[in-house]
Amino acid sequence: MIMNPSIEYVVNTRTSVGRYDPEKSLDQKVIENLVRMATTAPSAFNLQNWRFIAVQSAEAKTRLKAVAFGQKPVSDAAVTFIVCGQLEAHRQLFRVLQPSVDRGIISSDMQQTWTDMATASHANNPQHQRDEAIRSASLAAMTLILSAQGMGLASGAIGGFDPGGVSEAFNLGANDLPVLLVTVGFPAEGNWPQKPRKSLEEVLKIC
Image (cartoon, rainbow, N blue to C red; front, top):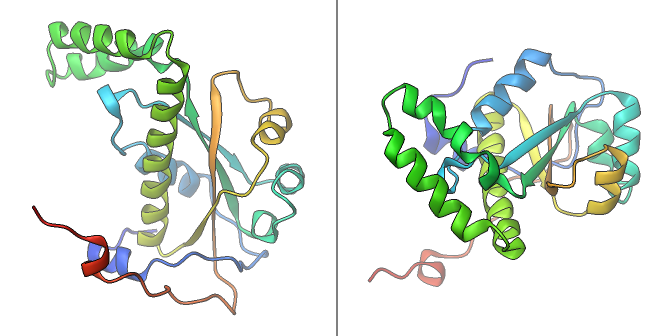
């Protein structure tokens, strides 16, 4: 699958899909490529404080659907990604930044400075960790959605699920915070077009 080169086309044609063809599946390489592109999303200090669980098998879909209030897209989409933000990500930041040092993008001094700054702001501050995890996971989820659209796939974001139930059903770690479900697959008949948005006058202020 080839990405459409026009980001304007991708954004303007994206819709939130609720009806999928349950007979069509996705190759593992496509799933991996979607997540690879999702991880290009921005994150504070380049924390990359996210994790993805690709729910593809019938058994796993049944487990997820049970804790997502029985929503049909979870079972009909080719794959549903559980997009998690990660708490205590500052503890791994020095290691995560090492490839940027190795490539000469940042200095080792900056690597240590960023690690110290993130530790000072995140350690002993669970609310800040949670806020940052939600921000990063949401940015990654949107990047995944736009990547899917660019590959000619349909997608939808689902916020209606039981986070504790998801964590238990998929044995998530204590630092994994389920933020969004993102369904991806092939659309069936009956989906809505992109719904009209508020006017720029209502949402934009230029100072």
